[in-house]
Image 1 (cartoon, rainbow, N blue to C red):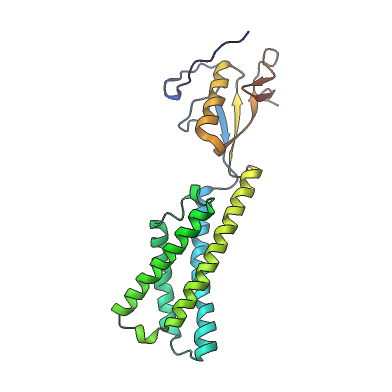
Image 2: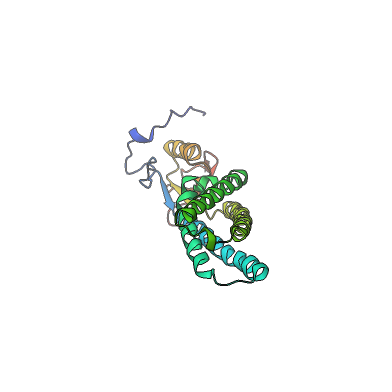
Amino acid sequence: VSHQLAPFNPASSKMTSTDTRLAPVRKPRGAIARRALVSKPMFVDLVRLFDVLILALSSFLAYGLYNITVLGEVETWPVATGATLIGTLLSINVFSCFKLYDFGQLRDLRYQWLRTAAAWTATLALLIVLIFLTKTSLLISRGWLIVWWATSLGGLLLARFVVKHMIEVWQESGSLRRQVAIVGATDHAARVINWLRNEQGTEISLVGVFDDRSARAPSEVAGVPVLGTTDS
């Protein structure tokens, strides 16, 4: 016998001990969630750390390629190191202002490439202003700044491509999704499943439904298979 499910409102839901059970994270009670294998905040922090390393290593590479190889000088090394430190610290704030570390945007390669190029150019422009204000422009080679900008930009753009690929691989494997099991093969469980699909989207993975009343439980609920009892 078919019947129509009433619209589900998480905020007004009231449950009894025989209904579906749920973890309390701004969602209706009825699902037991397990943390994703890959922490998104930690991953974003790692991306930020790699950006800093790319800028620092590119600076040293640029100094070696231009100042040492082309100009044959090493006397300005301390000044270049100081400029590298200041530029790297500036980049942390500028990149955040350009929203480069929004996890939802890390998968958008066009967004990342355009904003990364703009953010790094703005960072170097601020550094040049500081160089002139501190009257150290005679000690810092413009050629080194140009090579540093180019090598860093190449490294940053390549890193964004790698990050996008890693996120896609983890999404396919489910490492970025919370594993959710529904307890209770009831009509309310169907509403919970539909709500999770609509509100959480790709953030979760529904592994199945469990019900201790195995004799009366259907084979599936809202397309999610009933896998057995909570002891299985």
